[in-house]
Image 1 (tube, one colour):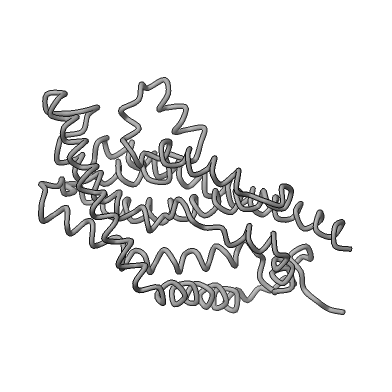
Image 2 (cartoon, rainbow, N blue to C red):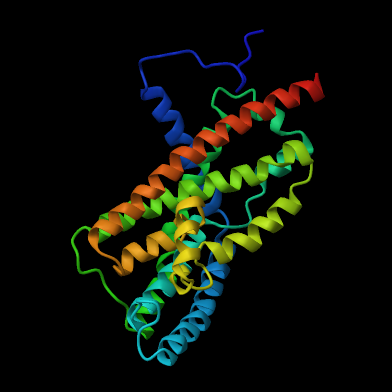
Length: 284
């Protein structure tokens, strides 16, 4: 039988146009899939907006108590940090993705291995489609609300906007890689709920969702930034946008994100390959 599995090297072709067409088709299907959940989209945008008010007032109180600026952030920068972060939360999607773990638990993942697209590429393309839909529907409502009710810090450097857009795209891929690895623990554990709870508890704090990581001492924040992917999920795009650092550091932080993208995608591919060998042993 000439079946194609992810463990078999795909045929080498110099024509990459079909590959891009397939990738674009899966991305489009991911966009259409999440566009069907209109009520969930409205409810999620409303919830993020409400929590945006709570977080913004807390951080503004911290800045007021600190005499104006807190950890190098002005009140306007903190307000921008909160409201844009509330919009990015759905775009990056820190939590609630259990599709791979569920398919592993039910055995449906076996059908993924019969497709002519590597599972990592397939899930990544679908996740990019989801992120594109969230960018249109979940990102703008909190940001526009913040603009209406608070003084936000707008970019003053020409390179900030393209760097922010690049940083958001890299953050989406990094978060996908982390979620894929957390889900992939089900290959060995058969139930990934423990790993997901650990991921949920740690990612919110270490990604800068609850408070900027610059509030921590440098001896904690710097190793956290360089040795883990967590700050690259939310803290880096937000710091790039609010221009807390100089232009060189802005570009350096995006460069760190780029390194994490390569490392995580390579790790996902390696883990998937080893998991497929384990599936063959179990399933025969």
